[in-house]
Length: 165
Image (cartoon, rainbow, N blue to C red; front, side):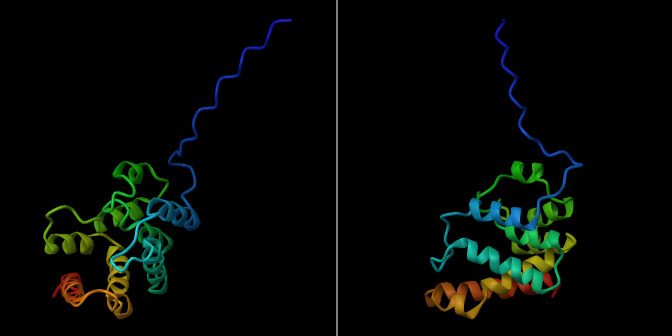
């Protein structure tokens, strides 16, 4: 009897455009893994900020795609995930567009950043949730006065730019 030749290995699973999109639970898990070990300016686990922005987006009436973008809104900017990961991810094109719109570019003026957000459907709501959590008085209270004043002014300026004022 001849030995049976080994079966070829299974090819890696790839997501095709017809495959289902990631669930919110899957997006949350990816975001939490990607930002594991990171902390915010106050030393809190960064995932707390992501969860707050996702919840703020949901509370403001955001769609599942916007909530997914909220979980991922800082992933590329913080080098937690790559642009290539985002391009290949099983996410709706609108979700990917929001994540890219919210990703600050090095040296980019706030006016250009705000204009890109305003031009991307669904992005303003997610950014409003981000700003609301960033500017939360309880969160800012643990920072030194100079940092707190600088960030408060920065967030107010961006809010004004987003509203078109």
